[in-house]
Image (cartoon, rainbow over all chains, first blue to last red; front, side, top):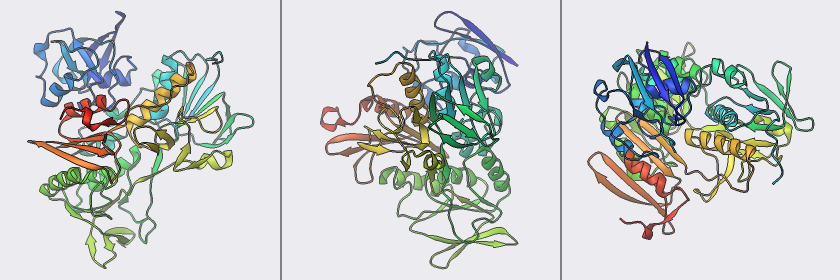
Length: 105
Length: 398
């Protein structure tokens, strides 16, 4: 199990033990974490699962071509720590903390 | 506007992406009254798009499909009933009758009944190994049949059929039978259809145009082939029928609600009974992007209409539903996205750059839709461009 901590815009935080292989987006959707939409279901097509990664980015795989294009189109500003949470899988980390942006659409 | 009562009871019929989103949005936006979400399938609400993509391929599991874990309904105070059909709406006493004989009273009723695969009524259509694809159960059965299939025939060159074809072609000889002269003929321009056809052909898919299926040939009750109107028979271990869907409007007739191609609703998604709304696949609604009334089958349409209704119930206003329609389909390595709504006669302006293809659809000097292949950034920009409806082509920098 990997743990994912989501920090809301109001500073509240929620930690979830995610099933192996799940994405940070999917864990949020099925556990009802507000602030991540993921309309396309994790295809890197809709840019509504944008997060700011608070832990080290080094543990994560690089940004793919589609993700790069989508990150240019997020509703909240892109930062150096911006990722699409559908592309972050629990296989790659034991724990991660992500800050949710103030809007996804 | 009159004061809003957010303490009433809302009943939502249908627990797909539209119904679920309506329930959750109502609760998150401050509806304090009872919310009942009634679905006719077992288990937790789930997403359908992966059923014809990653779920068939095995890259997405049953868990990946779940849209909301069951325990959250209790936390959020949403009464979710699975495996429960709604049999009738009694508008006079504002109740819906469930298949188990019980009734639920409502102050507001949201119909999110979805759509069902169109059946073909030809001899042999009920044979074993003839599949449709709509539900999780359908997908599980199809996945089982496709494993080890040598020859697969897909009836219908629409999105669903082509997505299944792209997966099935990895292990089987696949033939797609299209009734018209073009794939996706009602949905995309000729250049996009041609690009996709080329990509499928490269994977070994045999696409036959202008064909009509007259029978499924079966032996011992099990499909062995498909017979065409010219008498030819194409051998098949598995037949997939994907010839479109029709809205689930059976509740309309007894309730006296207007329905044809979906429940007829106004710009605020209300039926002629202001306490009853319809959203998602089953809603025939005025659509400013289409410039006409339309019924759309997409995740976008389901979730945006659900959010609109939740907001309109909590803060009623004169604003009309107007979200830009968008759609996607993944077929093998091809990623198709559409923003806006075009008609078959609209002109098509093609631009290509490597694997990326963009087709701008124009009617009467206005851009009505933009279709892209393998260019997600261009798609997002297209959605922004069209967010308020069709835009003058001359106002857009080429």
